[in-house]
Length: 305
Image (cartoon, rainbow, N blue to C red; front, side, top):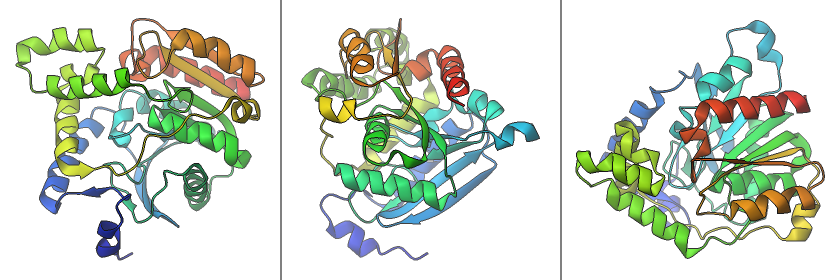
């Protein structure tokens, strides 16, 4: 499908790559990260009202597992589906897996209309799932992707077997401490190699000690301009209306949310919700403790099915 680049560039709230050369360098860095995880057996583009959504498909080799309810992964802001490399091998060994590049972030999707309004985000994601032919899914989101997933459970839950939120947005207003951490992590990518392990431990930032992740993060900042406001949290009344089985995983030292507050609050508001804290990690429990979090996610999905 031909893409109207002029339309994309004239909308102030639509993300874009700065130029083709920067985009190509970024995609090369992404491909190096994808190579660390499971190999997708297919890639597909889904046309929606908001643009073209690029999706990576992973699948179990066991024919019996192919009929299980699939997992759909929604990444965090400023990234793409490559961030799921620690999780795709374990998840796709048990179930079909779809990893979505969110329009408005530096992936292979092409955004033509903004999706930052909650009703638009829910419509975009429902159109994407419909375009993939998926009637029932386990939806998993990290950070900003967690807000997208939580918003879906509130507004368009019809296709959702369950939702899993990994240190998500949508529970609290994003505070200054999180933005300070983001900028400090970015600056730390320029530190000498000998200093990076210490900075990675101090900042709870695994990007610094995985060369491929570090290269991808730096290339993304240079190549792509995100044009959307930070999402607002759901109200207590909106959370209380969610009926989709929900699993919340928080990092003990998260700077996006207050873990001890949310691990009590979410199950109190959402009937049947499960909430757990992973120790010795911050904003990326599915990266820092991939084996443990993969096991927990699959166990939750099995319990729902």
